[in-house]
Image 1: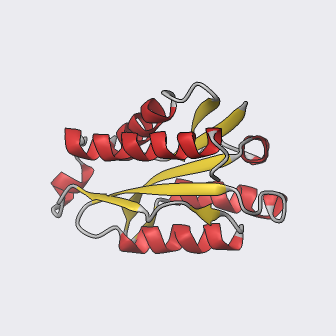
Image 2: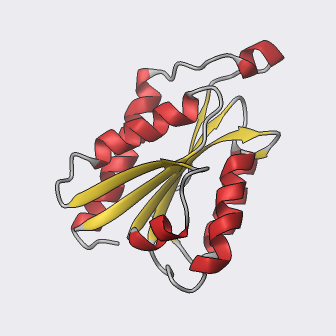
Length: 163
């Protein structure tokens, strides 16, 4: 059985909800074991044991969240050259942009020689004031559906040997 590892960080709930929706879609594929971990808990062994990855992060100050960057800092060199070609996808929970975090994550994944199977899914909530940015988020059903579809597609591709 193949394993899909979903690694996420969330401060206000949006990235967590999106990761959960992606996991829900992935779990519809019985030939794939879906493992969901917060970035702070995910490690080298988790990355090596998986055949595919989905990374979900908020964009903070035009970059990925610090806890997500910490995850990559901790696993990067120990897994380098050991996961080449494995597929990945990314979900960015953003206020109004998201492209900075997406580019940063893509650069790291390129360095790890991972294979991007879809453009980063950037979902914007429009938060611009400090109060709105810090508020607990409720992700709209349409955004959750996109995350669910991405998780399902990644799991189906793994199960069927497409990637």
